[in-house]
Length: 268
Image 1 (cartoon, rainbow, N blue to C red):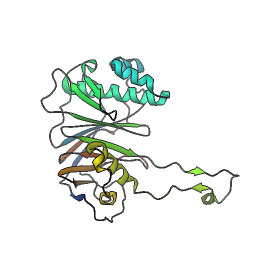
Image 2: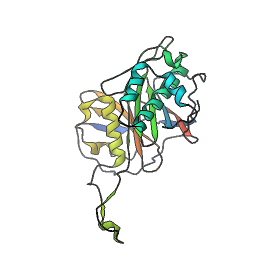
Image 3: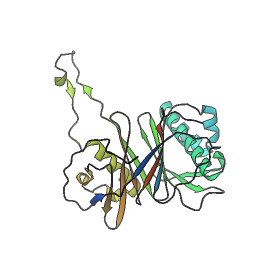
Image 4: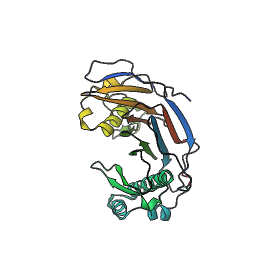
């Protein structure tokens, strides 16, 4: 199906160093989630983005099976988190990622060599039998969801969750508006997700771009970032008020979206 706009944005834009233009047609192909290593997958091709969306729950993948896939360094990282929820989320995300890469390369999940970059993002170091095309990886978290992206070019993912409204101390009152603190005005949530995905992919040089240039009604568009980089930004449909986006360093004609059909549970 063709991407349509799942979100509402401000339509106005302001002049900025970065410039945008509509992207060529981008096909969004929702698929069921399958993460079994025995289920072979073709690697991403130029012009494609492969996405996985799944819950951070033990569904179809037991705790023991997940931990058995992890490297010693990953197990140490699991133990370094301040609470069990974060440890569990990381373990599930990394175990599923290893299953995905195993299905692509034909290498056992434990044989996939992954390193972490300075921002904690996984980097595929080497894998016997890996495809000739490079594989870039991005991982982000969106509430109960884990998102994984694979591309032949640099890729970044980001999500923006709705703010939690806080009640001021005091007795309950009918005038709820008087006791609810509304956060200070910020850029549209979709714009924030787009900007964060671009920063995650392109690096800190994009921190200072005018975010209003990202306030477009198209769910996929191209942005030129000085001195000479072109990125495609793609809105990712998410439940509720969650907003998510991907930034890819080449034009994307097709998005294979695993986990956008079905309930988001992990199938092995």
